[in-house]
Length: 65
Image (tube, rainbow, N blue to C red; front, side):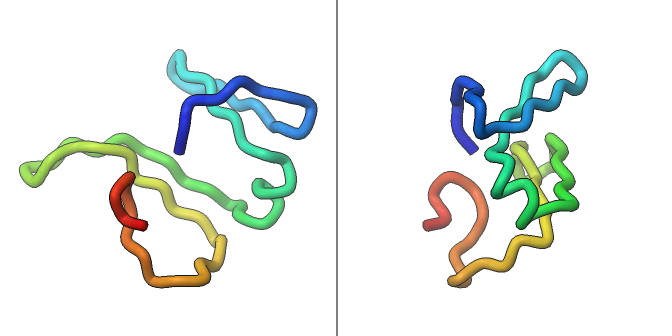
């Protein structure tokens, strides 16, 4: 997940005032995609789930890989 400007290769979605951008090719490989923002006692952050197969067992989050 990163900040980005959309281009012709991207699909753009808007939800609750936020704009999400994903490459069309990646969207085809990863859908369905679920995204939520969770707040728990352990902390808070984005939760992203998709059918995309990972090449490694790196963890989630910004520092996972």
